[in-house]
Length: 119
Image 1 (cartoon, one colour):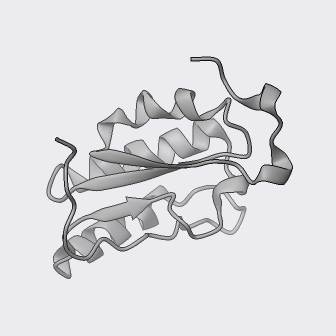
Image 2 (cartoon, rainbow, N blue to C red; image 1 turned 45 degrees about the vertical axis):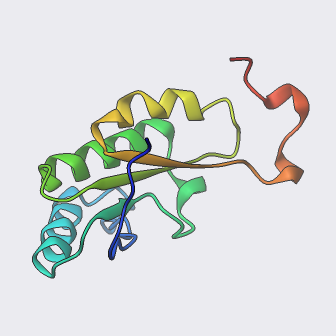
Image 3 (cartoon, one colour; image 1 turned 30 degrees about the vertical axis):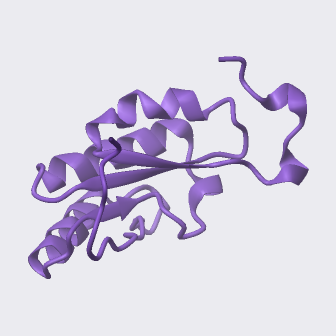
């Protein structure tokens, strides 16, 4: 039976430094802040509109950093949204450190049948 998530699970923004690199210290602060505020779980790389701006490696790094900061205190869900379906399987395995992942299909205008991976 799939795990059921209940309660408040906010989508955390991914903080950036002035040079647009990922602010991992700020991300850890957000994780601690929301857990201390009583949230029941957290979502990183969610629907904040930032998915097209990070590389696959950056997304994996964000998910790992959030999982480390979370330390299993609450469920952590990582969003797996990519402009192409080809990248999603490469995100799922490293993101397995999170309790769950969410996946969105690319916008129809960005996809062709040939872009779907053969599983």
